[in-house]
Length: 65
Image 1 (cartoon, rainbow, N blue to C red):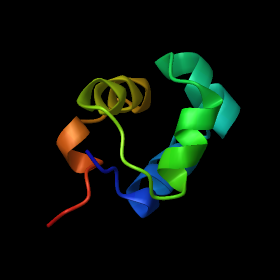
Image 2 (tube, rainbow, N blue to C red):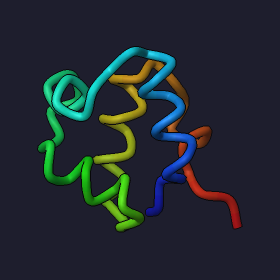
Image 3 (cartoon, helix red, strand yellow):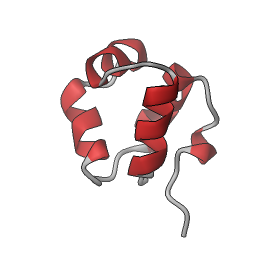
């Protein structure tokens, strides 16, 4: 699955979370979050963990199309 980079960064800014803090809250490694922010794909489970940590629906993070 591919998370929309802009949506992720905006959600992190809104939640006032750094990559390190998001990694800690989500249980996803800081390196994986960095990869996602650089446009790499990830597993559905990873999307769910990040969405939960940001208190949002996973569908609102996904890249459209």
